[in-house]
Amino acid sequence: MSKIAPITLSAVQTDDFEQLVEIRIAAMRESLERIGRFDPERARERFRQGFSPEHTRFIEINGRKVGFVVVKPVLNQLLLDHLYVVPKAQRKKVGSQVLAHIFIEADSQGLPIRVGALKDSDSNRFYQRHGFRRIEQDEFDNYYIRHTVRNIDS
Image (cartoon, rainbow, N blue to C red; front, side, top):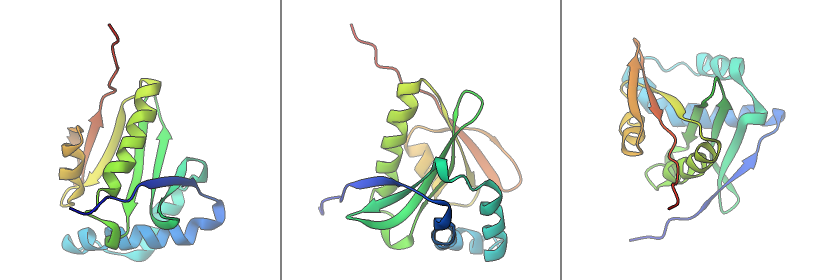
């Protein structure tokens, strides 16, 4: 079994927008093509509408950017707005490591985490494996919540 390289999360600047969009498009392409909704310009515009550099972090392995994550505080919860990993780094526990970081942040604040996933995306199984429970759905997406975990010392 190969050793899993540890990730680091690093700050994003406004001028990183194009690199982030490229990562998003690469990560989502297969899922969106599967349902006939792949449109790079639409993906760019949707990301631009909610782009928030202060809530966005690059995911790096050995100094190489392999994805990004966006976590925003919204109404007494954390919204996991985006979690994208480039195809070459997928299925290597990168997303699991990112979630571990987010879980620590959420649990330390006593906040649940909400996330949406494209219905036919593999990300649905990923989130469910990590303790998220589906709470609603619409035409294209499923929505999940992961409640905070509190350590109780005796």
